[in-house]
Length: 205
Image 1: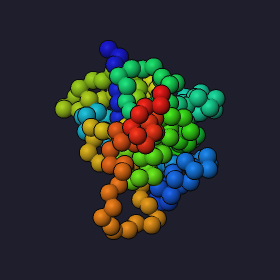
Image 2 (image 1 turned 135 degrees about the vertical axis):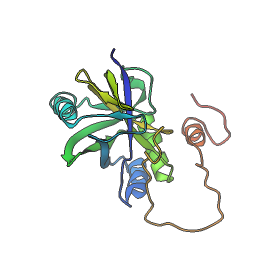
Image 3 (image 1 turned 90 degrees about the vertical axis):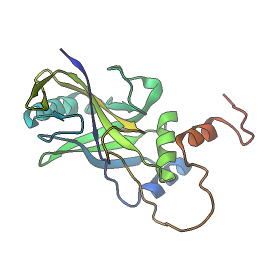
Image 4 (image 1 turned 120 degrees about the horizontal axis):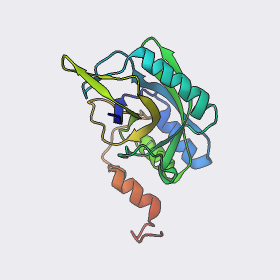
């Protein structure tokens, strides 16, 4: 029986990501990220294994369809749905390539409300993860859930609380310093509040 399948992966970024995120927020320049978004043949924390031939087929279809047509969109946080909600879109996948068994994705963080939240998170060194979303069935064999031929990739989303340990994006600022000044963006809630509310805390929406 087909079901919603999610797969969390680390998304490695270089040391310029925090600075690039700040610049993107200030001048509207593009924020482009690249890193591992999927892995073939390895058991994940959910006990599932994606075979390389299935992933190769689906990634080729994804490149010819959503990526080529510039509609490879992903959301902020992982919904329990196969529908991509345009009101919550934060990224567009620009390209996908293979590096051995690793799937490398190149994504653009969009200047949408949800995309700007991601940029604020990166700019303030907040930990963020990435997760694939797809539909398909699994078959258990010797404690492993093998993803079956009916699997279809839907998209990749940016997530705040992945279930896989270490499956996060962690940007590093170029100018790290030690001090006692409190960071006003220690939580996602603070960032969202500051985006939609003024300094008095009165919501402007």
